[in-house]
Amino acid sequence: MLAQIGDEAKLLAGGQSLIPLMKLHFANPGHLVDLNFIPEISYIKEEDGALGFGALARHAEIENSATAAKLPIIHDCAAGIADVQVRNRGTIGGSIAEADPSGDWATVLLTQAAEVRCLSPKGERAVSLNQFITDAYTTVLAHDELVSEITVKIPPKGTGAAYLAFKRAAPVYPTASAAVSVAMEGDVCKEADIALGCVGLIAIKATAAEAALRGQRLTDKSIAAAAEAARAAADPQSDMRGSAGYKRALVVALVKRVIEIAARRARGEQVEVSHIYA
Ligand SMILES: Cc1cc2nc3c(=O)[nH]c(=O)nc-3n(C[C@H](O)[C@H](O)[C@H](O)COP(=O)(O)OP(=O)(O)OC[C@H]3O[C@@H](n4cnc5c(N)ncnc54)[C@H](O)[C@@H]3O)c2cc1C
Image (cartoon, protein in one colour):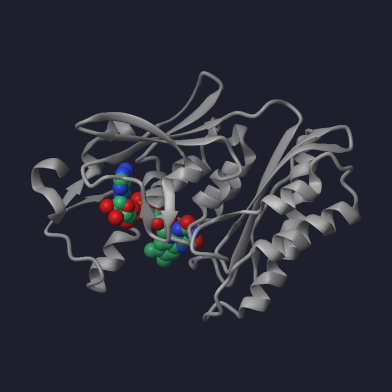
């Protein structure tokens, strides 16, 4: 249908981003192609050492899924998005396709081996998440292409990951957020992935912060060095959620906390995470 109708067509998933934009007349599609009539793309499965999320899997379904809970960072993300009404309708595929700089999923999935499966009349292709989102509200999707699935490799034992956001209230987007994954061997961090959300036009991979942890024992000093490197990587705008300086300070605090939680999870501890509210 996308190919038949052309530029006038827009996909509708949960409608939690698109409908508000249409109400504001920022989006004026001539036709809506409703994905909700395709139940086959609403699933959560474990296959070949990876979790697969059908594009239409709702945030609430992921939040309550025992399969998704195998990766606690996925639960941290799904359970913390907005309020229950938004989570009941909003989908992981819609969030990734929307590429909202304040969205939670991209930040989390950037620390995981995540791939986006894209489908069009020409066939299917898998794009790694760091190549899928190219700018704010911009992805590599062609007009006649849709997101069909997001896959996340289950990491080996000894790896732990966590996601924390700082929010003014539940139904709003975060002011700043951080996702961390660490692979530990004893006290030593063998591998680290750190991503920052809401402090740039897209989620930022804080590579200098990762380098500050890699091969190091996790001590207050190495964690503080990583958090400072994350502050330098952040590129926030001052807006109604806070000044750029305030958001950088939040990044430091969030990254420190998330590294500690991720390391505890890597050791096998069950740690519940809840976002921090102002
Ligand atoms: C009050 C409120 C608070 C919110 N707070 C947060 C928050 O804290 N964190 C957060 O991450 N999000 C938040 N959201 C957004 C929410 O997560 C949305 O669910 C999400 O951004 C879009 O998903 P959707 O399924 O609703 O997509 P839709 O609104 O239906 O679609 C969004 C865009 O993606 C396209 N699209 C949808 N599905 C596909 C697909 N499979 N393939 C290709 N293109 C597709 C649509 O054409 C459209 O352009 C909030 C929304 C509201 C209304």
